[in-house]
Length: 202
Length: 202
DNA sequence: TCACTTATCTAACGATCGGTAGGAAATTAA
DNA sequence: TTAATTTCCTACCGATCGTTAGATAAGTGA
Image: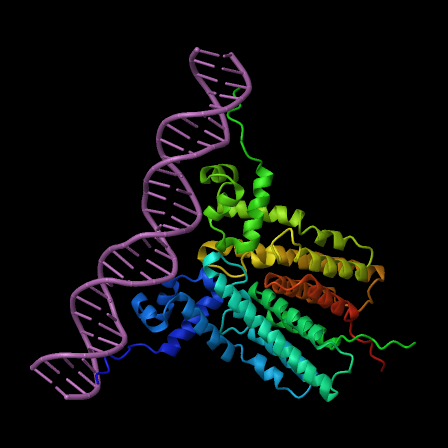
């Protein structure tokens, strides 16, 4: 059987370049012209290889989660909640200010709000963030079972709290806040981590 | 002198309606057609009364800061840092989930990322957020001078930390997180507020 | 060499983008 | 009534949006 003309560009490299554009400009702010220009391919090549803008974004998002966003899963594998929080906060501070990538977090700034056409992308990102928080919650539940956290701890609240700090750091990074500044926020959060209810003494 | 034909719509009401649209869809996601439809006016009326899309957004942003976002300045006027933080966290949880408005915070989700055309709007929002953090920092500096915070406290770090939590809550709200959930985050942050360095005992 | 398959490109599609010209309508002052 | 002023609406502007048709080029298998 015939194999056809071989592709002249590297799909994964092109996807990485698309990721940079979406990361910097968001889903709506990134035009097809922006993407093709950065990716070094023509529009028909983009559509042939990736489907359409929405599919391209989802593929870039998968690549983001497995690549620059991979520190999240690494953090979950740490042996105790202290190490989980430290890794999450410091690696996040590093990731959202990595000079090799646009500032901020794609899952936060990819489509925090949007027009009607991008609604499903926004929902996808909402789901991804929720999934991250859920993973964190399950990790903390395990820690309670292991005795790493006191029995009365609320894993869900701790996960929501830590997620909020991480997302807040991502917002600040998107606005140009420096890595040093974010590390101070991380350090401050770790001073009182985990923020547990004090045992009542009566 | 002649006064001309009177305007048939209320400029402030139209501005409030425009604010709702920008709040829900962001600067880029809100089209002129979206805006005129919601505002109940035609395009030439919009341009005649508000200049252009960018000016309209800036005016809506001013209205946001003085209206739904007014709790921020109220918080700064509280008599001590405890009250400031409590008001900021709880009122923010309420504001970003107010059923009378779109979820989230306009200053965060109006243009966290964008295409080239909206870059100046993004910068405007970066400046506004930075101004809020600066106000908070100055408030904490005052608290140090007043003895409300220990002499060694870092007002800048405390302001950055609290800002991050507030912005993180705004991100969560934009994704549909409930008011109750956000109140739990606020409560958790307040458990350990302010997160100061422990005095060394050597 | 020839059919087959797939990628390449130029050029265009209809829809929507933000923004405006130009004239009718409504008001006030004379 | 008339002139002056301002808002109103319809219709349109050029540019860009995401997307695709259609022809050509480059490879494989027979």
